[in-house]
Image 1 (cartoon, helix red, strand yellow):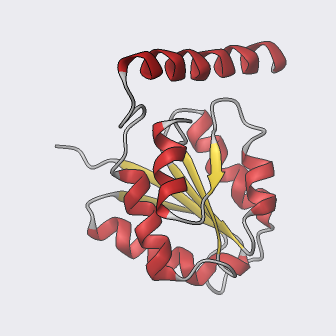
Image 2 (cartoon, rainbow, N blue to C red; image 1 turned 90 degrees about the vertical axis):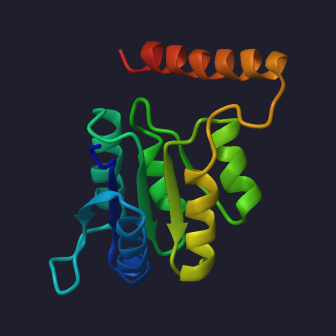
Amino acid sequence: MEREKIIVGSTRAGLTLKEELIAYLESKGFEVDDVGMKTDGEFVPYHKAAAAVACGVSGKKYRRGVIICGTGAGSVITAAKFKGVYPVHVFNTFTAQQAKAVNNCNVLVFGEWLTPPKHAIQLIDAWLDTNFTDGVDDEWKIFLTNCVKEIADLETELYK
């Protein structure tokens, strides 16, 4: 069975957390493509690292991505500009699960200055272990599926 590829990127402010998350994801069997800044590499601003991850997800080369910067705020703003990319900056396992179950989030964003590595791993697990519409009744599954479809339709209209 082919390993799922996941794209991960950061700026300088996210390098330490990025390295820990990559090691963790690889230990779970993911093939990780590391974009953005590298240790001892050229500086990559947050918006370029976020754009690299979002471009990979938007282009359907990856189903999921992770972005790490200092606070996470600018990376969410940047990644949300890409069609089909639904980034969420999560702070606890409930929001990580709900981001996937309710909003079909395909990009997690972390602020290294705000999220310790062990906590980030818990959030990654909550997100990875949750499927879209998990834990909702059939009526809400239909509702949420329609919401996500309407958002995609809105993107199609706006990105002409």
